Length: 167
Image (tube, rainbow, N blue to C red; front, side):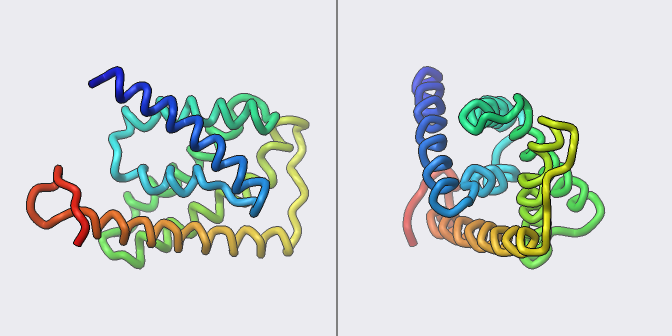
């Protein structure tokens, strides 16, 4: 069973790499961050961290970034989520989605300025049009997270959590 899990993870990373490149070229949208936010609270960090490290190194290589750039892009918004969960009560759906929006916004802003900072030592160019684009992308990420949450709740039954079924 362990071998199938490892093989499934490797194939999943290649599929994620394909879809990430596709959505990045088509819409300038990072699908991996949506999945990262969806898995952030659902999967134990000890299992999620190795996958995130491997995926971020693969993205660094394909995007010609310095190694660790995508890992920093994932970790800084995750730190914001963790910090906001310690400060605020995120039991309500609205609080959770507001923090998801702000962490997504931080991710997209950092996506513009962090690679240039790590590569050349200067912050990247950012104007109001790019900030507006980041707001739209953060809204789309929040909506996708909400839809993914609704979809996952529809698959889980009220009884045994290990059984997946459609309602």
